[in-house]
Length: 324
Ligand SMILES: NC(=O)c1ccc[n+]([C@@H]2O[C@H](COP(=O)([O-])OP(=O)(O)OC[C@H]3O[C@@H](n4cnc5c(N)ncnc54)[C@H](O)[C@@H]3O)[C@@H](O)[C@H]2O)c1
Image (tube, rainbow, N blue to C red; front, side):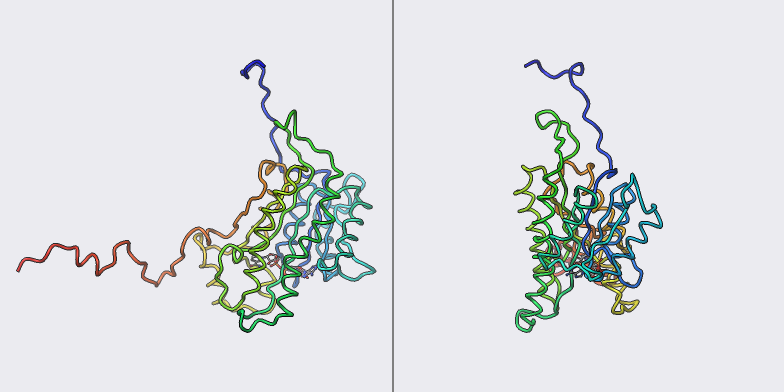
């Protein structure tokens, strides 16, 4: 085999953000109060780069609203196919904890578009409050079902649909841009750190999503499926403010980061879109915090004294004794 030189080496193709001709299914793609949640933002941003988007939500009117937003911004059809559709069973919402709903959503996607390339497992709920001592076990079980089992059930039907796609790895695994499909799971910074004083369910379930992502990445890489995870920080979405949030609480959330700017659904959506696209073709099993640096450092409130490396008592004892 002759050694590679500039003469016989072809530069690799440059991956793009474009999802033209691809189909993405986003769970929990509705958003209350006409706002921009993580799922709605992801759906709109995926449509912006050419994907046909399938919107699914337990509240069907919210998924339909997202579809209307996509239609009004990008038109109702592209290349003879709808830019976006919402899936429902006789007008009722789709619940990711129901296996038949997950199966139906993927079937609908294949019957309308003939393919599925991207799954965004966005559904997640705060779940019950409470510690191990006082959390309601039924609420706990439901929370795990929605936040963890729902993602597995969607993947159970979405991944076999992706396996119908051609893989373009390039010659002997070099250079190609496109694999068969991409799954993006939405966890949370609460899945990276344990600090939610009054909730055990949420950090537990989001921690499970983080490791489920790595396990899925391992199991499906050989089939040409990438699986990654986005961990949003304190983003200001309807999930957070629908039940009322004081200005002070909003400020406190903003300050729990290094950048000290407020995040929103678009910040999550942009990272989802990147991971879904061929620009992330070499990324799988990654856990991406989108949190303005909240998990990169210990954040000390401005008025709190920051401990110095050498405590004052230590440094006093190290000082040379004052001469009398
Ligand atoms: N907002 C934040 O600060 C924040 C932070 C970290 C992680 N997250 C995660 O981001 C994701 C989306 O959060 P959001 O703030 O955009 O929420 P959101 O409440 O605005 O949107 C979630 C959507 O999911 C739908 N849904 C709930 N249960 C469902 C089910 N069983 N089946 C189908 N649809 C269902 C809801 O109807 C809603 O429209 C969640 O996984 C959440 O845990 C949010």
